Every structure is written in structure tokens, then in C-alpha cells.
Image 1 (cartoon, chains in turn blue, brown):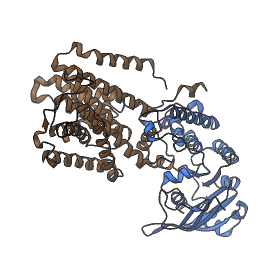
Image 2 (cartoon, one colour; image 1 turned 120 degrees about the horizontal axis):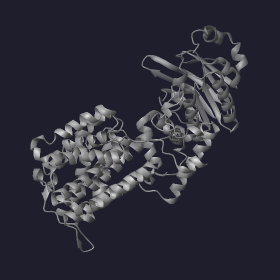
Image 3 (cartoon, chains in turn purple, orange; image 1 turned 60 degrees about the horizontal axis):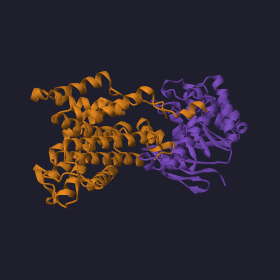
Image 4 (cartoon, helix red, strand yellow; image 1 turned 60 degrees about the vertical axis):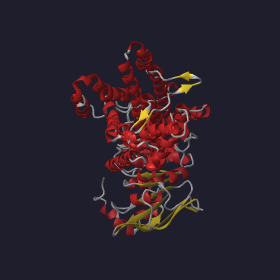
Length: 257
Length: 315
């Protein structure tokens, strides 16, 4: 059974079909890539999976169970956690506080602990902060823990966003263009980070424009264009697929970002 | 999470000043002091909704009023001693907050603001028209029993003042606790980025309703104090202008304990000092709003972040 399966998933905005009968299967512990030209519907597909824009047709299956249309916080609590193409952090808050948000649904605190703590909820609070500390050490940003996140460099903010997603202990980590805006050395570091996340048993689904990165990183790729899947396979097969070359690789100049 | 030494000294001085104030004040100032305490509590409760949750609640006098009227009706119509009515006067506003927030919570900014003004007006119309014959109409309810506790009569202005101090300290405790909890952080997250908060697993709708319930409950408690202070409740104490006052306390002061206290001082105590200028006394009120928004758009003492526990640094 696939970890995540999309069956004929379709999303329309008015007359525009952003995602058109998309089928794919992400297997346990894979690094799965979705590529396609700008406006092909990749981010919309992610939004459908994570419940931000429920699809009109088709189904999203998580570990064999249908979760189509579940709200984002429930999807996250099932173990599907994402990052955003345009980084979305809580800019006024510190790095540690930002990452702490990822511990939200792992924490055992209930709403009434916001009014009055108990010894158990204080312990829970401490345990979660220590998890955050661990994650900051993993991303080598623990020295920035108290810094307001809005004042930090772009590459660091990307790390904070990944740390936030990772502390929630997801089963599937969805990365929307994780290398966007990163320089070469940061991109190299990202590759290693993604591998080590996978080695912790996390499955990864990513969109990426950097073709070299996708080809080295992923185990399996689906190419979409105008919301429709046009090809799927291992990176080597995709690189030599004439349909793909025509739709995407052939016009590399256009999406050189 | 240790407070900085300055902050600790600040709170100690403030609490001592609050405790010693009745020894120095004449009756007029003691009454102003009590009202300052009550309005500070309401300001703090509005801060949970507006400052932390970022929801434009322009009808907060509604919950303050429901609390006051619950206590007054319990005492006047049903003969319950007014202090025993306190649990009801917390629960009923809290429930109203939860029920009213449900259908409007998805509204954004200005739309939510208009809806909450609407609730405030509906409430005022109900009490002014003496709904069920128990609200006393435009005159309100007067002649409430004085509070007694374990045989002690708490009718003196000093006793009422200290009751206010106790409630303010209790509110401080709840606010400090909220700050260090998952629920409190969830409010900050959803204010700063609702979608990101929702995507990381926070039930943003649920926590917004929680904020309304908690804020309304605390405002209701403050309402009981107001009813006790005047032995009466009347509709004009809970009108739109009062809601504007509570809204402005948070905006002018800033979303923090010192901010709310400062906001209450500027918006409420300063006009009292200038009372001799009669009709001009709200001059400073309006002026403070304009100046604060130009000079300190985040309020005089804005919320501070970067609070991380000590064991985080040491390892």
C-alpha cells in the first residue's frame, strides 16, 4: 500500500482547471519529485493534498484511507506536513518560538492548561522545548534561537521553516521549492539535509525548479503540464522522455530562476 | 522562563503601590482606583482576543455587561448573594463568547469588527427594553446587596478596592500562564499567519473561539466587580463607546501587561484627572489615540517575543 495516493485529483478555479486528473503514488521512504513548467499546477496539487484547497473530484488516500477535503490541521496531525514556496514564518517571533509551533499537535497540553498549568503540563512544556532545541542543533541554527526570525537571512529562514515542519515528526514531508533563493553551497547543504531526513524514516514529496537538484535527489518523478500528468518514472527515464523535453526541459531558459 | 531583574522590580513596585494606595487616597481617588483595577482586568481580557488573537473585537463591553447583569439579576431577582453569583457571571459570558464567536470567527478584520459592534447593540437594546422583565430597562437594576464573605461585610470602598486587586492579580496569573502554554502560543501563531499556523496542525478556528470564551469570561468577572462597586448596573456602562475604550486601551497601551495598565491609565485615569475641565476631559483620550498611533503604532509597550526558557540556553 502506498503511503500517499492521489486518484484522479482535480481542482478547478472558475473555468481554469489547475489540476487535471492527477494520479500518483508515493511509496514509504521515497523521495518523490513533482516537476513541471511555471503555472503547471504543482503548488495547487500540494494545496489539495494538505487541505488548503479541497479538490473537486478524485480522492486523496493516506495509508489507504480517504482523507479528501480534511482541513489542514487534521491533515498535519495525520503526519503530512509542508513548507511553503514563499516562506511563511511568524516573523515577529523568535526562531525557537517559530519551531515550537511544530510541536503543537505533539504536545499533550489541552486548552485549559492555557488558564492553569498542572505539573504534567509543565513537564510537557519542557519536553517540547527540548525537542525544539534538538531540531535547532540538527539544522545548526541553535545559536540563533532567540533571534526574531524576520531579521534573518533567507537561507536561514528556509532552515527554520524546515525545522518547524520536522519537529512535528511527520511521516510525509512536503517541500515546495526548498532550494528557491538558495546559493550553491546552501543548496548542497540542503541535499544532505534532505537525505538525512529521509534516513530518519521520513518520506519526502517535493516540487523543485532546479533540475540538477531534482535529478540527483529524487527516486521517482511525475511531470505535470497544464495540470495534467504527462510522464512519470525514475529520473533517468524522465530526462530522456521526448514529451518532457518538449514541455519542460526544452524551454529551460524560461524557467531559469 | 525568568523575568529580567528590571521587570521583576517593576511588578513588585506596581503591586506594592496597588496595595498601599488606599492608605493615601481620599474616597474619590479610591473609587477611581477601583475603577482602574476593573478596567485593567477588562483591558487584559480584550488583549487576549484583540492583542494576542488579532481579532478586531469592537463589542467587548457586551461581555463585561453580561457579567454585570448576570450578577445583578442573580442577586436582585433570585436573591443569590452577589459573591456566590461570580461563577455564573464568568460562565455565562464565556458561553456567550463561544456561541457568538462561532458564526463570525471566520470573518476578517473589519468585517468581524462590524459584526461585534452589532452584537453589542443588540445586547444594549435587549437590556434597555427590559427583556423578560428582569433587566430593569433604561434605568438598570439598583439597590444590590453588599457583598459579604464568611460573615464579613465587604461593603466599604476599601474592601471593594482590595477585591479588585485580588481579581487583577488573578488575571495576571492567567495571562502569565497563557503566555507559557501551547494555547497562548497558538494565538500568536494564528494572528501572525493563520494559514501557516493551520498547516502546522493548529486548529485555528478552535483557538479563536477559545480566545473569545476566555476573554469573555474574564470580562464577565470584571463586570461583577463593577456591579458591586456601584451596587447597581445600568445599560450606558456597556455601550458602544465603552467597547471603543477597551479596544483603544489595547491599541494605545500595546499587547503586554505594562501596556494594558498604561493604556487603562491613559484612556481612563487621565480623563478623570482632567475632570475639572468638564466637557474637555475626553480631549486627552482622543489625543492619546492619535498620538499613539502615529508615534507607536504597536502601542506604548508592544508585545515582546524571543522568550525562551533558561534550560534552552544552558543545554
